[in-house]
Length: 213
Length: 213
DNA sequence: CCTTGTGAAGTGGTTCACAGCT
DNA sequence: AGCTGTGAACCACTTCACAAGG
Image (cartoon, rainbow over all chains, first blue to last red; front, side, top):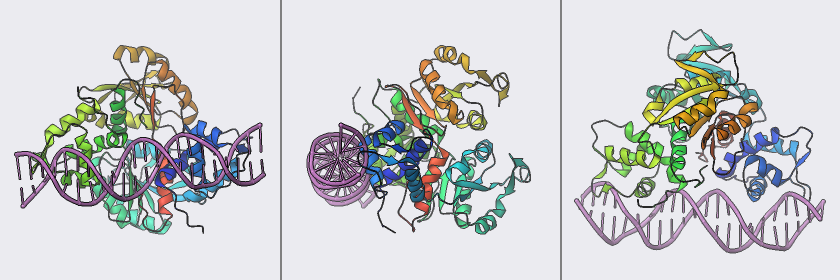
């Protein structure tokens, strides 16, 4: 395996490129950096630099093969075989995510939805049965799960994260509006509605437009 | 007013600091950059640099006044008076957000939830009545709304964004898994579950740990 | 003595501009 | 002729290290 390391900033854009490529006209065989740049709202030079980290495979004078590029990006992101994911917290947001149709399309499948509330256990969300949090570890081991999503109330997030780490998860997506602390080697990404609104608020309160993003 | 411009990277961390400060023991009068850095999982020097852009108000040898700092951050983010927000798309995610209790606490209130599906109009989500998208413009004008959230299916996102822009919104938070294009001067932030999972996937597939975040 | 505030150095990312292929 | 791939310049952010102040 060619040991190139892809810069963080590029990694965060690869899913974006992938989505744009997938969203293009099926009949389009090739895309230029300019096309993709427009679709993704970024600078064309950036697109080329980014793609060059995947081990360049464009054709000069022509562009990139759309399908092949999708394949390459998926490969680098590790999406070529669908990865199992668990969701902890069967509240509104957890339910919304469990119902989210895009999992399969984006390379994931939901192994289970967990909650600590016994009264929810046994009920289903869109066919997904809700399991008690106590069965998390066993399920994760059985299905070789490494990724999980926290959709609990903020007060339960830290404890949940710890259970997840114990269950062997290495990658956590935290939707709870709080910061969780995890040991070295575990990777957490935080997604928070109010944080995002607050950032928008900052730019909204300044005269148009000191661009955000 | 002292016309300092706060770097983007700092702006994205201010809500984080704010949340950490609010989450601390009520009795704590002062915080040091080291305290806050630990809570927020960042480098202490970064905290100090960031806070210095707010017009430094720490006390050497002591730290920052917790309440005052919260106040300062809120001020810079424009959160001192609650801002009205609209949600477009009354599906699972839209409902989850409409139910989200943190709006008030973080400086926002929901003016309305909108959908294009007539059969949903008139029903309520957690007390919030769902209105038809056609009343968006009038409501936004009436309540002086400048911020909106897209929680429609991806196919409807672009059209929705255009309606929002027409209705006078300048700041859009897009939860639909697609890229929307808007005119100059309108600010869009994208939040996408599968994008986040894909980024985690990348780091998960590499030996521990080329840290992400 | 402790903790802030900040120049200065270091790091990483972006953008330009053009050489190199096809 | 057109578009990629990339060195090099540029810019932004991070981190260090220490002087300044309570």
